[in-house]
Length: 571
Image (cartoon, rainbow, N blue to C red; front, side, top):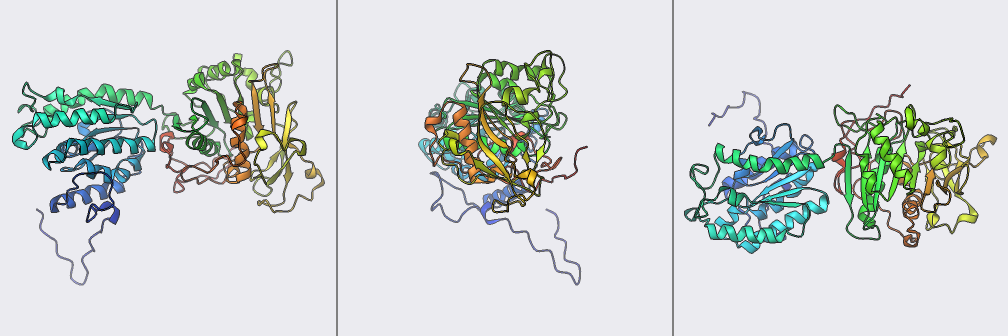
């Protein structure tokens, strides 16, 4: 132990840093989740608090890691898991001596807080030492898994069977096998749980640990860890291949949307579509049961979200989509990605387009040049590109000054009974208006330009701006195909959906596009899911240092307001 260094003369010794109360072990079990033992030995209290305090400081660093969650066997592997998994990002959340109830108690701060891309669990041996029942251990494991799935319904989980030990360690082969049987049964109905048979991997003929791998008959040595790592690597490879760098999936478990898949594609430079779309996706998944896949443009070198970068992958998700939602501007995606969009549109399935999607593509070559804004081919097909051919209108011009003039959406009197407008009152949009003259279809709302940024601002006094352009309409993009429904709006900035009337119209529009108008009620749930912190829209004003996986789960913020933005305008 290092000698204590006395305070310098005339100076006070620095105060001991006190760990946050929620990182300490509660004094009693009263009101705590789970069953069985929570250890409170002095050495364990100190270790628990020290470990958890460090991890509390490392939360941002460990975002998106594969978390190893366990006791001393996990802790003993080291912070980098012995470099056993190459470049895979890992986070060790093992505490020596911990029990399943202790892990249940700390999982929110230690595991869920980092929005893991996968979780590897090994637990239960210390419960056995405390003589807790196998039923109690299995119940705690079940509850841990339930909470992981509630946080992220797509989260891959690997449950390692309790390792063999020895009867003289108060861990007989019979008791351990009983625990493993009940824990396996407890998660058999959870599809994203893989049970790894690490008991058979290590057990000798008598069902006990081998001295050459477990010198103390409890903890593995270097040889034992290498064997465990070898068994885990194929399973972790599945996680890293399934965890697409551009994709987040939210899967609802209750509501009319069960069995329906919506794919959201974001890539605009200014209006924070990368905030609007995941917020809508979460509402539709959590509140209404849809499977919602969010794909976004990223920096191909860092993997960070970079709106408008032209780099996107994962559009093969459209193969199973029932609705494609786009918030794009001047994108020229790679041909293999554009092919997925082309294939989707050829099916005649519905499309929902927001704001700059009227000029979604630019700079595409060859067979996909027809998608470009302003396209002029040999005939009228695809005239003016994706915007006009699919959505019904292309880019014409601004009609309202951004950040100075907002818009009230005036509902068309003859369309007040349209399902998309059901329950919609006082919709207001923060972004300035666009000129809008859709070539066909039905206008649902027109924009009233206001001299101010609130819904009660006075209407513009400029005679030219007193014209009310179409700002929301519906149509079909394939003649004679009623399935090819389109809802389009020239609004949709991330600040726009804070307004309940506008947000309700958008949520209704998803249902209508899918032919589910009978499910649209005046009080359809539209509350945000998790924290929503929209950034003020501007060119380049997006949150830096955010990866798609940072949005996973229901409670991750969209986006962390501490993340910096840059307000410089693009040329």
